[in-house]
Image (cartoon, rainbow, N blue to C red; front, side, top):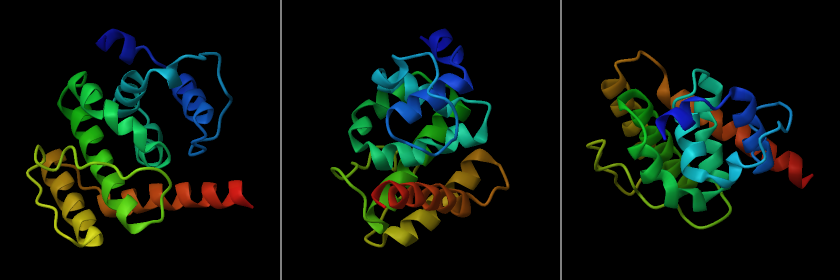
Length: 165
């Protein structure tokens, strides 16, 4: 399965996201008409993409389609350490953001905070900050993870407003 996931192109990922109504990345609909119907494969392919913008699309995907949470663990099991961490942290960011923003659909369950050794409290904004600190520790990357999460949420909200109006 890892080969099937790693052979997915950026164009296919963009097409799958567009097919699901996630207008986070501009691009054509693409020729692959099945990837969006394979949630675990799609999630895993996004998490291990070489393109940061495609990895980041996991956040709006989970916000737009909380039903994909049912496939997040299976996708994580397909991945090796760096991509697995990306999936776990971006999913958990969506979990926190869903409690800050008005988001459609059912609430995301907390799937990965235990594996990330992250204690979540009642304040979703503090939880997001704690996740950003933990993401930095675990990844070793000097990235503004909080800003990254907020950027994904901002673009997703703008796309919602665009569709409504």
